[in-house]
Length: 608
Image 1 (cartoon, rainbow, N blue to C red):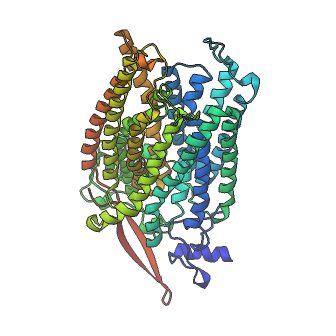
Image 2: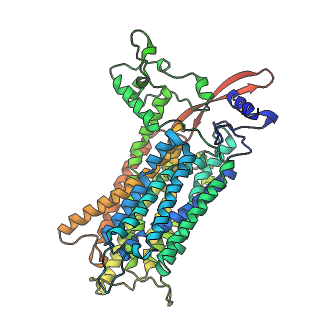
Image 3: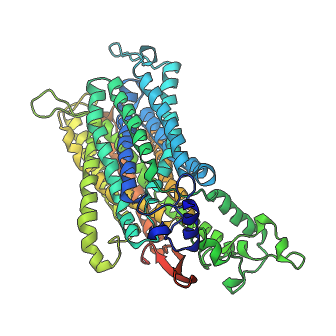
């Protein structure tokens, strides 16, 4: 009886059940598909479990990723370019598999169950990886003098097998966990909607606390205690994170799968091509669309027709066959909302492409930036303590942590009074600032490397050897990268989530992660190409011996690439129009049981 009352309340649109208890208005349900009470599920209570999960999971992931370059060069005896490419190829796969996870979540399992399955696969990969650095037969042989035998096929297969199983599991977890977190806030409730504005900032804050622990404590343990301990702790952390997430299940809100976004978009494009000869009516009301009640009953958004990408509007044209529109095939007619959802995703693609180069630059932090550190004096003071070269990445994280807090608590409040934007500045403006700081970062890195090379040559170290120059000389490029990430990374994730249609949020999150995937693959391609081309001309810009190379030229090249990309982004951002959805609410007068419809426009951002 209680379930029936809940269903009636939601279907009537009152959002209130027996006893005056308030239900969510965005279609949220429990795992059994029943409507949920706002006071019992969701909000920051549910997000606490999710955010703590992310803290431990990021500790586990970056416990592997932060020092992967060092393991490949020191333990598996790979060269600089080979190790860099293996790191970025793996990272690229990690961030491309979320597209598969988003498809499975939207079309079949839903976000929660896709996440649970992905977590199980992820854990299998971590366990295999830990075994590969712990069991003697699976560990690569140590160097004998200057002779470093390569890892056997079995040893390499087990290690890389563990890495790529992690990548597959990440495809199920990464696009869904942040979306599950955002789903805990009801967009139909003004108070909860305002809380969501800060969610992504604090989400990223928690992530980088986990990264900070990995790039300091875990990296130190891996370099100075053992790789078994350094990998075992993140594995235990992952087990803890999964347990914490599952413990929060009773208080989560869930969204039912709404079908594959790829299928719906394919249907729209196919229908438009099939009817390419048909004219689009001047009156948008003549296009095919469902009745308002069909959307309000399911708590979905209905979108109005626009003239952008007008060709796709043909998909909603009623193609009368034999004098009766009812004879139209299923795949040849789409609703206006389906057409507009497809347009919205397609509008994001050009901006997504401009994220590839920035993600290529970010990839340098765990590869070539680390390689630079291995050539320098890593002692602190007169003691014997040596800073692991990968630990400088902690300064990227520390800078981001400070910048995110200052941004959310100081900058947004100060600027909001002038811009009237709840976020202070638009998401694209925030991302643009991050891109500009990235240009400055790579320019600075090029100058610092030029100074490092001058020092090496002036001390006769062209043939190799460590410099007496302190590793902290590299600090500015790490700090600047962290500042850039505070603007770009957080803004990018929130932008693609916010601007994706309501029924395609998992896809929006996956798109933001796809940029990392392509960016890492692009990094491998650029590094290999530049090394091959410059090697043919006598002196490769990137080599195992950085003292005899020209890494400064490579960084300068990336600076020019970043600047050109920044210009393209600025043009696209200036032309971009933020989405606007019509949401329909239903009020019920409890005295006369009369329904009243009202529509309001919700703008995710003011027009730029």
